[in-house]
Length: 102
Image: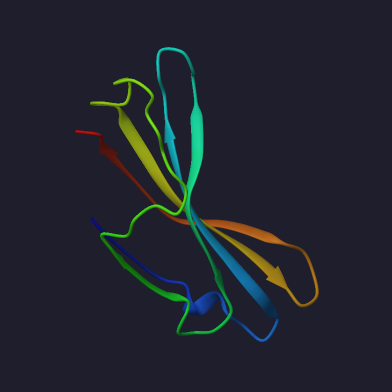
């Protein structure tokens, strides 16, 4: 799986730091909605903000203690939190896509 995202445009003179994270959202018979952060990164330079993730392993485990996630549709969402030097915090969602566990 490959994920690319150009977050360079969000780094402006007023940006202190960007926090980018990927969440996995899915439903099971026991839970209407489960959401887990599986990857995150602190972006401070333009080089950091050019994301190109290829076969990236999750930073935080997504554990299935049975076989409940097999065939389950999962929505992966990239979210960016912008912490400006001055002003309000912003949360943005530039990308979202779905896949199913094998």
